[in-house]
Image: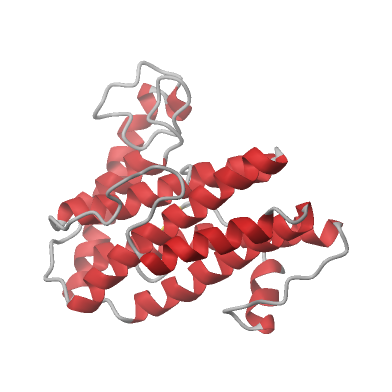
Length: 251
C-alpha cells in the first residue's frame, strides 16, 4: 500500500511537470529549456523521442529499495538481452536493408538505456563492457547472437521470423522477472519494455503475414501470441502494474 500511494503521489507530480513543460516546446519545437523539456516528445531541440527524458525522471523519482539477488540477475540479463535484440536487428538491417530492423533497433537502444538507468541508480556493474555490435559478456547470449544472425541471413522471411522470436523471448523473460520483483521502479521499467516488445512482435508478425507465414511462438504459447498480435498497438508510459497513465508520450 505504501508503494502504491507513493507512486500515485509521484504520478501527480510528474503530470504537473508535464503540463508546465508543454509551454516550452511540445514535440521539441520550442526553446526546450532543460528542466521544462524533460517530458517533451523531442524533435530537434527536444529531448529525443520522449523516451529517456520521461523514463529517467520517472525512475529517479521512485523509491530506492533494497535489491534481491533475483532482481539483480534480472537487470543484468535484460540489459544484455535488449542489446541482443538491438545488435541482431542492426546486423540484419545491413544484410537486408529493411526499414523495420532499423526502426526497432532504435527502440531497443532506448530499452537498453532504460535498464542502464536502473543499474546506475543502484550502483550495479554494467554487464555491457563492450558496446560493439555482436559482443556480449554472457556466453549464452553470445552464442544466441551467432545463431540468430545465421538464421536471419537465410532469407528475408527467416529474418522476420528471427525478429518475432527475439520479441517472443523478451516477453517471456520480462513476464518472469516482473513476478520476481517487488521494486516499483524495476517493475515500472519492465512493464514499459514489455509493452514495447508486444508492439515489436505485432510488427514482425504482420510482416510475416504479408508473406503468408504464421509465427506460432517458441517461448510463449500460440494462444498468447494470438492474443498479443490481435490487439492494437500500445503507446504511452505504463505504471508498475502495466496500466497506461500517460498515453501521449513518445514511449
